[in-house]
Image (cartoon, rainbow, N blue to C red; front, side, top):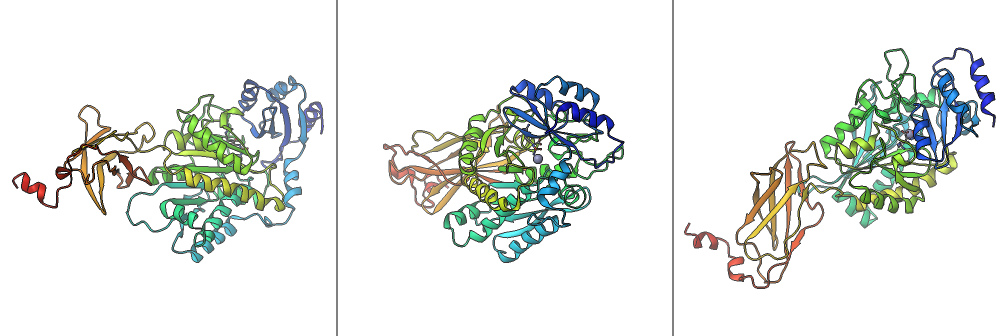
Length: 511
Ligand code: 0X9
Ligand code: ZN
């Protein structure tokens, strides 16, 4: 380790460097939120964050400006961890042209194609769009048959927003493999896969991954050609919610460059469009490193209204992979990240995991990192099917005869969804009776419906029912998604009127 003075002197002596000059890695003590936020606001990449310090990457000709130099010289205890981060990478992964056990884009594509070929009943290859350089954003869709035609809860597991975070490709690939290969023998997993859609997208930024593996290991961003001739936008600063407000940079040269506008990049547009078009329910974006389970918000010191739910789910997942659960911003603020958008603008329960303890873990560590995270993912798939129900509804205490129900569309969580039809469905033995609900004149998000002669054949037997909501794109979402509401039937309900034989009600009414 070297002192800051040595580093500064080296920086001053540094000749004009090419785009791919390797940064220095510097550990900066920062024990308070305010100190960490101040350092992150310089717009450099925060490689690792702890409650005690931030490790930042200083690019000799870019982010390591005289001003940053001055700022750093006022902080005691700054350490240079490495003069050449790319060299650190090369030591781990070797100098071989291929990526060793780590997957290249083509290898990952071949692996997913192989799963789709071996498990055609449940797995299919999909593309979520194209990268800047025209690569398909490949995804494996894993789900069982859909008998009801109702929209299933949609899970998305993403890897490789950041090019050099190779382990973040491996974890989604391991999820896909584990789910496909155990479907036939693990009844619990089969039930999950049959009732949900699980999308695995191991490379959101395949151009960056390829560049990192072939040219420059320490590459982070996409391969967008910027107006000033430099390359790359940080995809985890380019999502639209609170874009450009914290912990990013407007300098195209910077490793945390936010791009020219919210969603200026195809890589982030692809994920935005997928979430909107598929009514995304729950997601994890894998990054490295730090062994953390994080949840929104990232952009500032603001808790979501769902903080308790996020915390609860994070703690449960973190118990399985032994990571640390916390809100993203706790370490430092950064805007334009995946989760802030997916939660605030697409109504998804969105997490970011930082996996592993180093940049690129040694090959011998890959299997355990994957296995630990697959456990956490399975728990999320079990418990995360309906974090934010489309309709809010409280079952009535007792139902007698006429069944009148009210349900309220949760527009706050689903701002882009437009309900065009809401129905009430009541179980009547093996039959389901349904009735259209009408929007309240005073509040179009409140839907009311009445089922005359509701099917209560036995006084005291609970009535089972659910709702469906059809959106303008034709998705029909069931609420609750995987069970029924139940309402107690009033013990005094006159049974004769409640369970008329077919046609009886019509006769009574004189038709
Ligand atoms: O800075 C990022 O985009 C993520 N870290 S990484 O080292 N993988 O680049 C962190 C995303 C979560 N956001 C905050 N902690 N603010
Ligand atoms: Zn990352």
